[in-house]
Picture 1 (cartoon, one colour):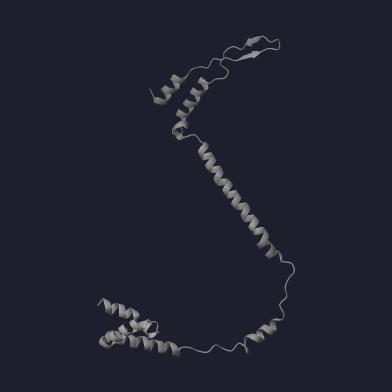
Picture 2: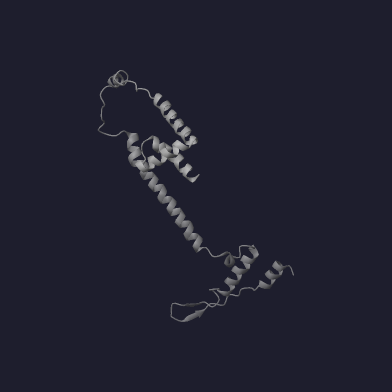
Length: 179
């Protein structure tokens, strides 16, 4: 059965005389014994004859195409391109290059600002009051006006009184936590 399938695959090559003499002898021996393969080869030959009968001659171009070409006249070549051709060759690539540069710049800016933004754990964006308390705590801790001295024009130090920041953290926590 394996030999039968292999021979069936070689029938088209046998019909086209593409097999070696040894393979051709094997196929002919098999064809003398197998009626199925003989019928398949006959079908291939019949199909080849039908396809050969379908060929037709190409129409003559001397009577149809050549007079149409003569009616068009000589082909003139332009020395300068038209505005549309100039637009296609020069301006369109330049504009697309500018657009590509703008897109790359936008992507880089988004990546940069995404990397520079603090994480959500640092900003307390989940609750506005938490954010306010965090900013207030930073402001009271790092107050630059807490102990500020200014040198006067004579070179002596004049102390500016300490600015007192009212500590209302307990009140804000009480409002936030609802106690």
